[in-house]
Amino acid sequence: MIEDRSDRVCVIGAGYVGNGLAYALKRAGLRYDQLEATGRIGGNWSHGVYDSTHLISSKKSTQYVEFPMPEDYPTFPSAAQMLAYLESYVDHFGLREHLELNTEVVRVWPADRNGTAGWYVELADGRTRHYKAVVAANGHYVERNLPSCPGEFSGLQLHSKDYKRPADLGTGDRVLVVGAGNSASDLAVEAAATFGSADLSMRRSYWFIPKTMVGGIPASDLDRVWLPLPLMRFATERLIRASVGDYRRYGLNRPDHRLFSKDVTATSSLFHALLHGKVRPRPEIRRLDGDLVHFTDGSS
Ligand SMILES: Cc1cc2nc3c(=O)[nH]c(=O)nc-3n(C[C@H](O)[C@H](O)[C@H](O)COP(=O)(O)OP(=O)(O)OC[C@H]3O[C@@H](n4cnc5c(N)ncnc54)[C@H](O)[C@@H]3O)c2cc1C
Image (tube, rainbow, N blue to C red):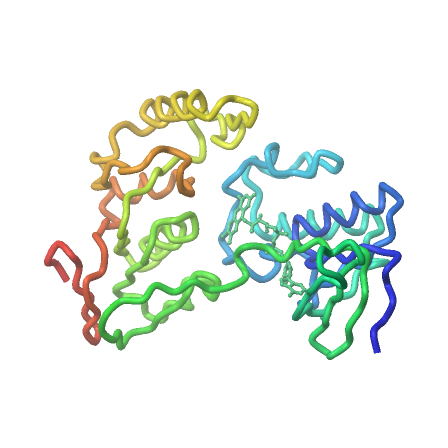
């Protein structure tokens, strides 16, 4: 039997975006249900980050405008602070009333050809509901994306979503981090600080942006969405150069693509670790062979 909820909106997810949406709907006087697969609110900040995670974007540029972060929070709050902040947002605006935890959505489809008659939402427990509208705020870091490399690796392999703390790397005497996004950079630095050194394999070049630029200003505070992209690009490239200089000083390749045409990596600690020889850059993996990893430059 289909439950009739066609007088309300279905919000999928209770992460940063889902909670903000729930409040926007509440403020507009619209009826809604908020469905969250796990037993907690907070999304990534409750189950997708490692213990040592700190915001990459600043407190000022990340907080909800209608609910600023506590004054005693630092410029780059920790994961624990982020989670506490998200919990207090939900409580402050009384959002738990329409929140259903442990309620996973497994399928959504339109009630008519173009969706104007509402949407059907199927839950993991087999129930189906009919809603006026559906907002998917299920996050984009839900699925693990593992690279495929030829050969077999016999050591411990871990996706960053499953990494919580250095003990997860076992004895960690030789750690290779694959990829150089935000999580990878943090993990390489943390592994190097814990075990003495770590390698970082990159199959492409990256734009690395220090978390703070000239004058100690957080890079995310310089983001001006109203600026035309070419101008934003021009200014940011110059600020990066003034803050860290040429990437080749760190053993990194110069980017082969335009700034902001792909995700950028925001990190200050990686530059420090590279200059101290704690993190060693490596090219793409060519082949895995037991506990050996062969790289495209012939090293292993
Ligand atoms: C290490 C790390 C550092 C980060 N640092 C920053 C930063 O500094 N600044 C920044 O802005 N962002 C950062 N992010 C990105 C982070 O994902 C966002 O801050 C934020 O969590 C995105 O919110 P969201 O609501 O879109 O998604 P999520 O936080 O992923 O929340 C989605 C929610 O939907 C739920 N869900 C998924 N599928 C279903 C389903 N089928 N049914 C019901 N519920 C479902 C999930 O359980 C989850 O609770 C970082 C991410 C990581 C991993």
